[in-house]
Each structure stands twice: as structure tokens, then as C-alpha cells.
Image (cartoon, rainbow, N blue to C red; front, side, top):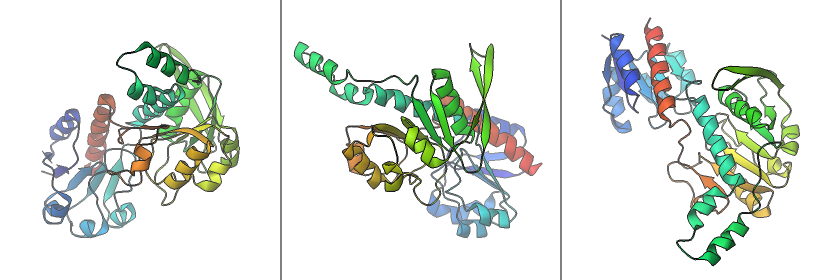
Length: 316
């Protein structure tokens, strides 16, 4: 019987599906420093973002046949080295796409109507305070008719575009590996819909015309948005990053916020997770979440079931 270590958790339905397929599933977490000793007893490991599967660990586990990542990014796995050892590397790019896209829009709605600030500042009493805040938050904006720039037009980027189009936004997508994508928009609870084909555009065009910008790319080893890119953006743009820490230069972002180039930012990911820098956390025009893009009940179930299906096929 093949043994699978689920080291960062899995939805019960995913575990049940693996067990029904004949796998021996262990869900007790093994600390990173103990994996070198204990992982050789397993045929597969399932991780999220917490556990790292690096070259030295891979080399120490001759029985390992599958490394599975619940989620999209694979930056915590040495993928090329694993494949050179004939180890199958699995992720779940589609399972959490809707959840991440919805969180990106949660930040956009929050920032466009100052909800992150209003929730902190609502008075416990006093008519004068209430009227002052009402005036302070009177310059909100609607998303309809605005232009959303999307960096990365894979599964999550396309889900984000789907919501934007349904809201009546214009979409400018950037993806050097993709020329176009057809977006299927479900309407009326799935009882009808329409399809829209969008062509991607150059980065500079997107930066110059977008009112909102949302990132949906992996960590590429260097920021995609830094001082040069911020300089090309419209004044007062709103930036949302629910992708990966390191894709936005945080120093450049703070400078753009101070200059007014960026009106506000929504951040779910940070360079120094799990200890983001204090000046980001304290900034009054940043909406914050603790890397919860895929953290919905639906997404976690989808991830678990997709992992189980792909692991089963890998051992075929």
C-alpha cells in the first residue's frame, strides 16, 4: 500500500477519496527539520506553502514518487530537480481560482468605499463624529465603467476578468505567454451566459490606462512592479496583490502611496511572510489580509478532491 504524507492539511473529502483509492494517508504534521529523517518512509507528500521540498530532501527520499502542492504556486518545491529524479510534481491551478478572484474584488470594493478605514474609525457615540466620518468617506467610487488591468492571464486572471466584465468594467490583461483568452460569463445562477474573447496587451498600455491593477502571477524571482512601472501608471490607481510576495517592490509601493500615484493598495501577500513589515501593516490606505486567497470552504474541498484525483492518476 502506497503511503502519503499530508503535511499541511487536506479537506476531509480529499482524504476520504485517497483512502477509498487504497492509499495509506497520514495527516500528522512532521516538522520541517524532521522531514529528512521521516519522509523516506513515504511514497508521496502533499504540501501547501508551509512545507519546503528542496533538493537535499528530494535526494534523501529514493521512494518518493509524487510531490503534490495544494494550490497554484510551486516556489516552495524544487520542481526541476524533482522531475530530474522522475518524481511527478502536481499542483491544483483551477481549484481555488474563483476564491482568489473574489478576494481580489473584496479588496477593490473595500478600497473604493474606504471600508477598511471606516470599520476602524466608526464612533461608539456622538453625532458630530459620525457626520465627520460621513463627510470623510464621501468620495468613494464605483467599479462599473472603470478599467481593470490584470497581470497574469491564467486561470485566476481569467476568473478575475469574468467578475470584472460582469460588473461592467473594461479589462486590459497582460501575459507574455498568452495572446488571448475566451471568458465564459455565467449569468442568472448558471441559467445562461455569454462568451467574450479578450486579447492581451503590452504592459505599458495596461499601466497607462488602468484604474485598478490586480496581480495573478507566480514569484518570478524579482518584482514585476517597481519604480519604473509605478511611474507609468495613472495617478490615483488602486493596486491589489493576491498573488505572491515579491511580485511588487514594497519600497516602491510605499513611495507611490506617499506621492499619490497609488491611491490605495490591497495586499494578501508579502515579501516577509509570516512577519510583514510594520509600515505596510500600519498604512491607512492599505487593505490587509493574511494570505487567505484560497481559504474558502469551497476552494479547500476542490483542492482536496483535485489532489486526490491527480495523485491517483500519478500512481495509475
